[in-house]
Length: 218
Image (tube, rainbow, N blue to C red; front, side, top):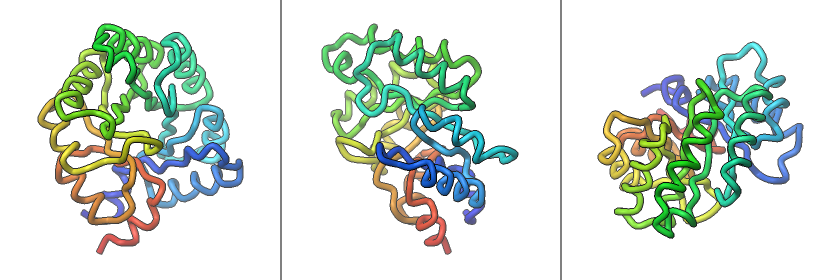
């Protein structure tokens, strides 16, 4: 895999709460220059990212319910709709972890399905926060997300409970098969890690260390 092929699988990410407009523009320029699949930003920065990426093929992904996933379903759906109106074409939403732990799987499905419905033709990725779940929970959460219409299951927010691991990606691939794609995110800092995650079954990689990862590819 060459640098262009790897970059085409990367969602370059800037989700720090204190990220300035100048930093968002710089990150968008990096994503454009590298040829990334998407630029992932907080909802309030989607319009800025749209301006910075005008004329490029880099998609804009907006996070929803981030990073806790604990807000009301109606709020998540409205957040997704606003992000799409501002220029996003992909939505990365956080699953309702508390309801999942309660065993209220119907709530989890309704939560995801509401965001999928609000997102229309946009891709929806559901963040499971795998670092907080046992293996059997990861499988169940992934299957619930897919049943609710998600296009991707995603490992982590990067803000709690650890990041992506090869074992988790492999487990998720076995669980969802070809019914959904997989995004590995959280803690991806170098090329060997990125390539190992892709080999395990990841279709996309979410990272802020894009330049370092691409530079490390022979």
